[in-house]
Each structure stands twice: as C-alpha cells, then as structure tokens.
Length: 286
Image 1 (cartoon, rainbow, N blue to C red):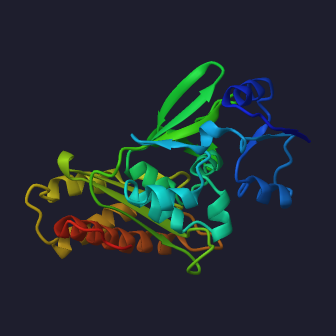
Image 2: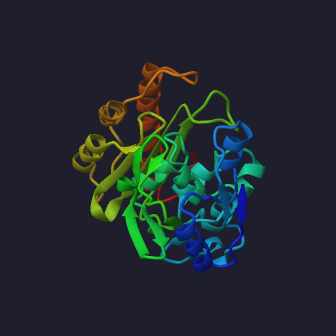
C-alpha cells in the first residue's frame, strides 16, 4: 500500500488525478476502522492532514473539509447550532478531535450524524479536481448506501452553509447514550424570513433524505410573522409526515417499525424545541 502525503491542495489534486484509486484520509475514523476489519484494502492512502486550506473556515460560511468536529462545536456553535448539536453526538472526545464533516460526507453512510443537518440547512458541498471546482447541493450529493456524487478524481474541499437564520435542532436515537451509531436521526432548520422549514431524516433510508411533505405542511401551517404556541395537532401531523418520508429496514440496531415511530417522536420534539426558541428569542437546548 502506498501512502501519499501532499503538502498543498494543488498537490493533493494532482495525486488524486494520477491515482484515482487512492483513498483520502483525514481523521481516519471511518477508513481505519474498515481497514482494521479488512473490509477495505486500498492500494493507496491519500493523507490530507497537512493541507492548511482544508483546516480553515471563513465567514460566509465556508467550512473546510478537514475542520474537526471539536472545532465546529467550539468555534461555530453560535452560527451553526444544528451542525454543532450533531457534532456533539459523534463518537467519543477522541473521535470528535479527529473526525471531520468532509470525512462524514465522503463515507456517505446513511447513518452519518451530520447528514440530516446538512440537508435541513441547505448545505452545498464544494468538490475539486485538476479540472476545476464543482458545487453540489447536499440534496444531490447522496446517491445510495455509501455512495456519493464524487467523480474518481475529485476531493471534498469544503461545505458551504449560511449562518443559521433561525432555530435549528438535531435529535438522534441510539442503543445507548454515547459512542453509538444512530438507529435513526432527524434535523430541522427554521427559516423565518422565508416562511419555510428544512427537515431531514438519517439512518432510515438508503440515503439521508428530505422530509418534503413535512416541510411543505409546516410552511403552510406555521405563521412566522406572528408566531404563537404550537397546536398539538400540528406537531402530530408533522411527526407522521416525517415518519412517512422514511423507508427503513430491520437490522441489528432496530426494526423498521421502531425507526418510523422514533422519527415521529423526534420530529414532534425537535419542532417543539425549535418553535419555542423562536417564541422566546433565545437558545433552546436539545
């Protein structure tokens, strides 16, 4: 196995063009696990940890693919609260120090913790190659189980998100409270100025996906200009529509029926938290 260690993004893209079989590695929290279990044996690893362009974020927000979860929590929690909430649920402190959103996207696991938030908040994925840069909406990035829209010579370079225009929430169900793969997860973002809601499910379909009918229902049911306490009927209908957006399977972590039930509950609760935050004009706690 070859170990390639570029010092710049340009060098990394040249190496990826010449060695499209090379597997990118940053934190290694997914790749190394697969290698340890002999689920993957790549001919080359492309180490991205020395590339400063991938370790930076800028106002706007452009978050480099190599920015670890712990920095998202510490440095971007006020601007990207939903992403920070999801980042807090990832693994252990050691994993959060190493793992990155870019790695989560590259793995494209349906159970990836950041995916529902990226979808709900309208993230755009920046990918690059020697041929140039492409911007891929998160809704178009996930193609199947552990499959994404990257071409063989491309690398994920950044994630673009707007600072949260309204409350955001994230919720996750696992077999224990920490260091666990999601049985199912849910993210919601409120856009008060646009009178719309972003809602997405994770670990409940072949890919993370928008709950489109649920989003449309809330856009018509909620009055963002004159917010009032939510009716229970609105929360129940929203939960049911979120549940219907999923197409889960039975596996060792949970049954399809349980996932649908849990998504409905999480949707009701996160909507309640986010809407109360809007009413209070304050930060609610997930």
